[in-house]
Image (cartoon, rainbow, N blue to C red; front, side, top):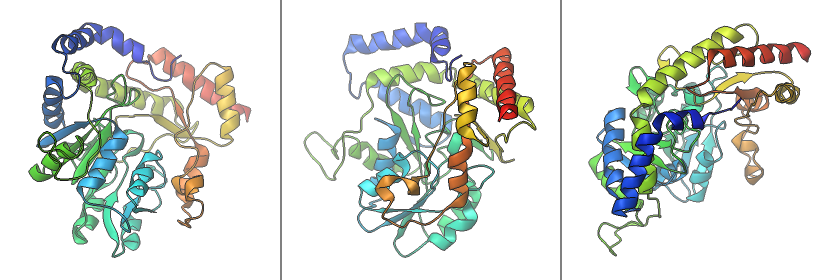
Length: 363
């Protein structure tokens, strides 16, 4: 059994994927080819915003979003301690300080009730993460941000395609960032990502930042990076985007089925009533996680842990006295993810659920 079955998706799309790749090979514009513009238009239309800027990775998307807001040395950015390291890493790379607030233990997303107490005169942005495929509580977060005149950056690396109160992830805040890493809900065949905004000037500056700060060739009005998406990745993503709405529905169906199969067995994901999750991972919480994982492995059921250590517990931050965040720490010690993708069958899910039930009983 595959944790994520990319081959099944490719078999469905191989004709259109190969056709898109062939077109790139024929025109030879491997960097910033016409596929980039086409993809940006389709992504913006999908999310429901004015601008999408295709970039080299979800990590670079976060970096560029912070850069376009002029965040740098001495600034603070409020974020969550339960995420992939890039969330805090990009803040620190710019010389700013990640300021963590604890999570809601049910959804694993940032707890809005704790944000205001973390705001200081140095705070320059709020960067919530829409973890495991479910959007954070953006009504509450945006209200606090507006009160304090702060921009909000959604780290939607895992939530592209998810909806909050009917609106798509990455179109809910000042800036939305996502990743098209192969295992993401919409994934390419390499690193890539995108940034979303309704601000014309911000979009213009982001397009410059991703190309070394250039507005015209060899003219650099600002500092930037090499953050361009390859034309080949754009061609692949265009093919995949054509079936993405259907895959979102399949992911929801798989998530609901797991919920039914595992009800009363383990702590299953809590999806807020305002949300439609895209289930980037199907993440449960268990006691004795190591033994649970070993049992599943022995039964040929793959599992993964996202994430085994909260960000403030990472060695690089050990001397920074960032505080204690008990809900994030508890989650980091107990969460584990099960096989999840649009093409997993009901029979496979039943097999997974049976092994989960056995693993829990065996401890």
